[in-house]
Image 1 (cartoon, rainbow, N blue to C red):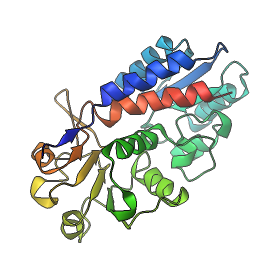
Image 2: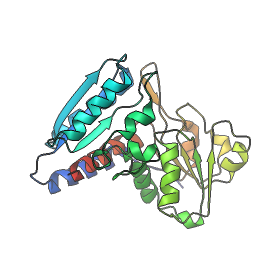
Image 3: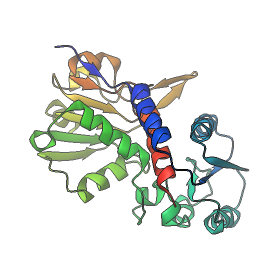
Image 4: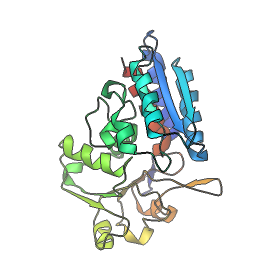
Length: 269
């Protein structure tokens, strides 16, 4: 049986079109802080800016130098918190060395935390992270029954792995078995070989190889690495043909993450 591909661009367009159709006339202000000049971050910020404007959202981009102090960054966050015309705030990751990420994120008002960064940090937030919602969408469309499945999350990172684990535990998803691995966990080969659903969020190429997975597994790739201008995922392409459902990189989880972010932004008050 042929593997089914998750067309993230198509799913993104479905979500965006629904948002346009159901969009209320209220004015929404979305403030995005970027610190430094990371090229990948700049690319993602531009995509968010373009999508926000498609939806009639008032976008405010704030570019701060990489040598900004912790206090100056937190003061900027507080200004957005206090601005009644801004209902949604996010800080583009990563932050430069010297900035305490946890302290900065904790300053975001939970009701404006549309990127779920407080959630990623283990704090209270009014929103789930958009990448978690994108992974949830892919799982739904795979039609896998979690209560009968062995699920593996590869990676414990701040933006994807950690919040996914929290989400599965917090929402009491009925899963047969959930394993969380680092990229070099000693039992990685054995666990992957028995997994029905693999969610990889390491950010390193070919962390999951074709010979490591069982046939007809569901593969969700939420990791990205840029090499010579090309965006690559964690999962080896040869693994796709062994799966029954997979999310490619690029064009899989990434586009849907931006759409889910906009859904959060539009629901902000």
